[in-house]
Length: 129
Image (cartoon, rainbow, N blue to C red; front, side, top):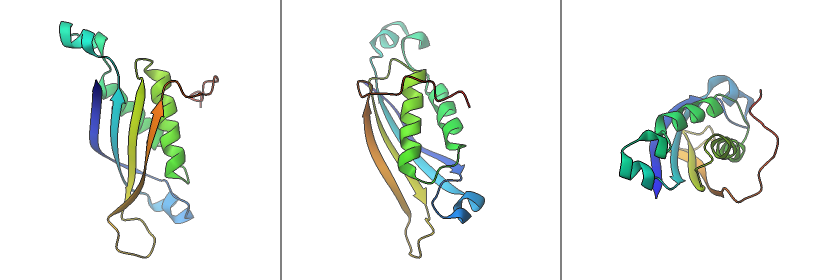
């Protein structure tokens, strides 16, 4: 069972070039969360699943934190989602930057990662900024 959020477009300030941290860019996120929502399917109650609106809020919060590498942003998002939503078993995450400043005509560049809850995670709370 999967919950999907696709085509999320957020404006953020990620990039190795210092100018990217000033100007910013549009980023696209596709997210697939493996979870057991059979209880919600049977009861029609949100308490038996993960609210995609809450997931979206976490994505926005993490995207607001500037980073040099998209790989780092993905790791941060996955860590946050596993922390805040223990029902998530696995995450497939695709993060793309539109019109990257690399001197070529390119629609987007990005990374894609798979994370599992069973992977070793930090035991400290990285969300106390």
